Amino acid sequence: MTAMNCDELMLRIQALEFTAVDLNLYLDTHPCDARALADYNQVVAALAQTVAAYEQAYGPLMNFGQSQSCARWAWVEQPWPWETQG
Image (tube, rainbow, N blue to C red; front, side):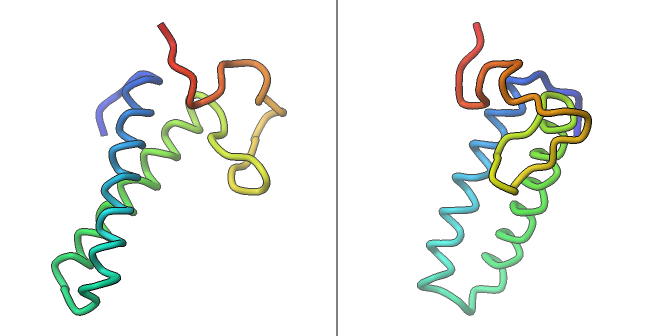
Protein backbone atom coordinates (compact mmCIF):
# COMPACT_ATOMS: atom_id res chain seq x y z
CA MET A 1 0.00 0.00 0.00
CA THR A 2 1.35 3.40 -0.91
CA ALA A 3 1.75 6.02 1.80
CA MET A 4 -1.54 7.81 2.46
CA ASN A 5 -2.41 10.69 4.72
CA CYS A 6 -5.10 10.54 7.40
CA ASP A 7 -7.97 11.63 5.14
CA GLU A 8 -6.95 9.29 2.32
CA LEU A 9 -6.76 6.32 4.69
CA MET A 10 -10.17 7.17 6.16
CA LEU A 11 -11.75 7.41 2.70
CA ARG A 12 -10.23 4.05 1.76
CA ILE A 13 -11.53 2.49 4.98
CA GLN A 14 -15.01 3.84 4.29
CA ALA A 15 -14.96 2.56 0.71
CA LEU A 16 -13.77 -0.89 1.78
CA GLU A 17 -16.38 -1.07 4.56
CA PHE A 18 -19.14 -0.16 2.08
CA THR A 19 -17.90 -2.82 -0.35
CA ALA A 20 -17.71 -5.44 2.41
CA VAL A 21 -21.28 -4.71 3.52
CA ASP A 22 -22.51 -4.78 -0.07
CA LEU A 23 -20.84 -8.13 -0.73
CA ASN A 24 -22.12 -9.44 2.61
CA LEU A 25 -25.68 -8.60 1.60
CA TYR A 26 -25.20 -10.19 -1.82
CA LEU A 27 -23.80 -13.36 -0.25
CA ASP A 28 -26.84 -13.55 2.04
CA THR A 29 -28.92 -14.24 -1.06
CA HIS A 30 -26.25 -15.97 -3.18
CA PRO A 31 -24.28 -18.12 -0.69
CA CYS A 32 -22.84 -20.42 -3.37
CA ASP A 33 -21.25 -17.64 -5.45
CA ALA A 34 -17.58 -18.54 -5.09
CA ARG A 35 -16.39 -15.43 -6.93
CA ALA A 36 -18.34 -13.13 -4.60
CA LEU A 37 -16.97 -14.98 -1.58
CA ALA A 38 -13.41 -14.60 -2.89
CA ASP A 39 -14.05 -10.90 -3.51
CA TYR A 40 -15.46 -10.52 0.01
CA ASN A 41 -12.43 -12.20 1.57
CA GLN A 42 -10.08 -9.99 -0.46
CA VAL A 43 -11.93 -6.83 0.60
CA VAL A 44 -11.95 -7.88 4.26
CA ALA A 45 -8.18 -8.50 4.16
CA ALA A 46 -7.57 -5.11 2.51
CA LEU A 47 -9.81 -3.47 5.11
CA ALA A 48 -7.89 -5.05 7.99
CA GLN A 49 -4.59 -3.94 6.46
CA THR A 50 -5.85 -0.38 5.92
CA VAL A 51 -7.28 -0.12 9.45
CA ALA A 52 -3.96 -1.36 10.85
CA ALA A 53 -2.07 1.26 8.83
CA TYR A 54 -4.43 4.01 10.04
CA GLU A 55 -4.19 2.95 13.68
CA GLN A 56 -0.41 2.69 13.55
CA ALA A 57 -0.10 6.21 12.17
CA TYR A 58 -3.04 8.04 13.78
CA GLY A 59 -4.31 6.02 16.73
CA PRO A 60 -7.24 3.70 17.37
CA LEU A 61 -10.45 3.87 15.33
CA MET A 62 -12.72 1.99 17.74
CA ASN A 63 -12.85 1.64 21.48
CA PHE A 64 -14.56 -0.84 23.79
CA GLY A 65 -12.03 -3.58 23.09
CA GLN A 66 -11.97 -3.26 19.30
CA SER A 67 -8.63 -1.45 18.97
CA GLN A 68 -5.51 -1.52 21.09
CA SER A 69 -3.87 1.65 22.34
CA CYS A 70 -0.18 0.82 22.32
CA ALA A 71 1.69 3.68 23.97
CA ARG A 72 -0.96 5.54 25.95
CA TRP A 73 -4.62 6.50 25.85
CA ALA A 74 -4.76 8.89 22.89
CA TRP A 75 -8.48 9.27 22.23
CA VAL A 76 -8.64 12.92 23.26
CA GLU A 77 -5.52 14.16 21.49
CA GLN A 78 -6.80 14.38 17.92
CA PRO A 79 -10.13 14.89 16.18
CA TRP A 80 -12.35 11.83 16.25
CA PRO A 81 -11.79 9.52 13.23
CA TRP A 82 -15.11 10.55 11.66
CA GLU A 83 -14.43 14.28 11.92
CA THR A 84 -13.13 15.91 8.76
CA GLN A 85 -9.91 17.82 8.86
CA GLY A 86 -9.42 20.87 6.76
